[in-house]
Image 1 (cartoon, rainbow, N blue to C red):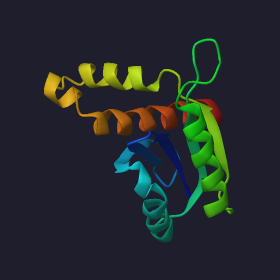
Image 2 (image 1 turned 90 degrees about the vertical axis):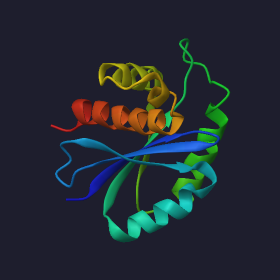
Image 3 (image 1 turned 120 degrees about the horizontal axis):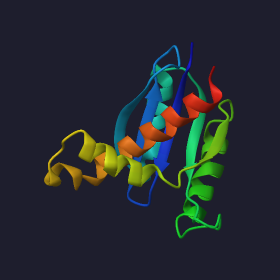
Image 4 (image 1 turned 120 degrees about the vertical axis):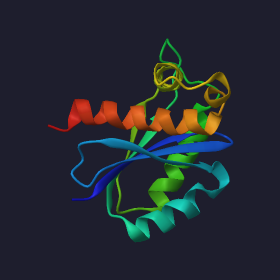
Length: 138
């Protein structure tokens, strides 16, 4: 069974998470430099089957765009163009970074480890994916 991939896109870094082949568990995959995202995905897709890409869409509390929303729209269009056979779904990522920081505290990570923004991005992508699985996969 193909996997589902989640992307927490940022100007500098992008966190990635992926399901297991049975689409039960979300696991952090890695964090890549955002300019290298497409190349990384091309390589990954050559090795793994992915049936859906979830792309975190940043929104303000009042549902308006954030400063990062235009960047996400640009990468959304690029993903659709580069990978036309894989649907790309935008999902609300409003709380994922805060939830990732909280998860790191709950895991007992030291303050220095919690400052690792790459890890925060990867955990945020994992939370985004796990929430999707909980809502949409029976």
